[in-house]
Length: 325
Image (tube, rainbow, N blue to C red; front, side):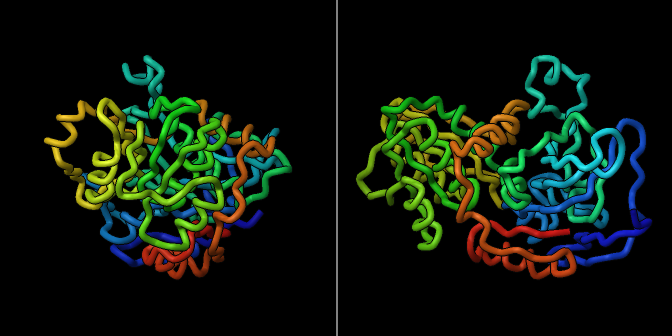
């Protein structure tokens, strides 16, 4: 095992630099993982574009990447293929005690200031947050399991049933996975609002249709992080309906037409990350072929080309951008 490794760090807005650094040692209860595949997501795009998400800002060069798969490199589980839960809850606060660890205010998160993420060849991570991946799931698909967990959580919060009319507002990777999760739930009336034709076509191939201006739905799941998308969700949901907000806004504020939402008596539900059980459920569903991930990965880069990978992400080319450390 080499003593040094390649690492991609964000040094400032739109400034990704690949460096040679010492390989980390597994300390305490953490174990060492050789990272094989890292998916880039919307939050990575926010960090890359402006060096901040809301009130959190990058104050030192940071390794991004929280959607990652790898192979355990040391210890009793050496050689085991795994996918990581990127959230490390504190386990001590009242929120954790009530079982809502995804909302822990004191936890750490891969690729968030203070905790380096996975755009490096090796990473030390808690073993209980490394879940085995079956041979039926390849490395790039494994890197999609964490965002699928978020999609499963969003669908859970939507409280749908097979008779529901559902709109997905935004068909980036999370929106695509929400569509596939809804299809798995037996929902047949799924409409998608998405301005990019290649994204709309992929969603339609998974079982959705394009939103029409007059469409009225029971639930809207917004994944774009833009006020126009939230307004569209509010407009399309029927009186008494539900809007689930998944997208992260650029400027830490979300606005919509309050009068429309109030007259309709809508329920607004915000979605943060995933529940502890969602990642295991994602592995189970994909491993069994109940949810397919084909067609989602459109660009693959080596770590040395991480800067180019982020430029592709920033332009919203294709669908999912994956980096191979």
